[in-house]
Image 1 (cartoon, helix red, strand yellow):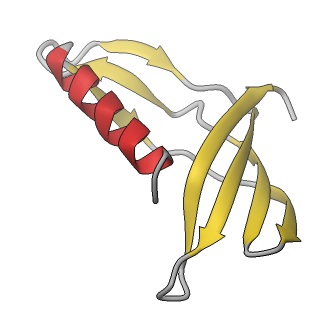
Image 2 (cartoon, one colour):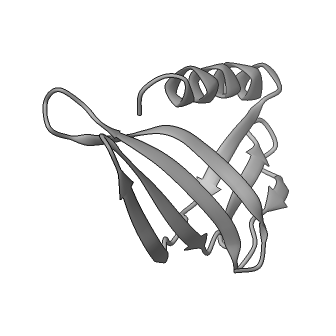
Length: 96
């Protein structure tokens, strides 16, 4: 990741820790389309996050869970080392 997405994620982690929240599970990606434009790319994904979510790090109790079809879009940039990195991730909504 690169900014602004990197800063958003790090701030969210700090906030979650202060609220005794952590993540569990895994997200399965299903890339539907990739569009290239200039030095960037946009990836459209239909993520399956139903086996993941947030849990209370003290009690271990699940607070929420994901959905079978999470429509997302990621804006990518190619860094100077040649690697593609997420610069912005957008949740479009449920259903793909």
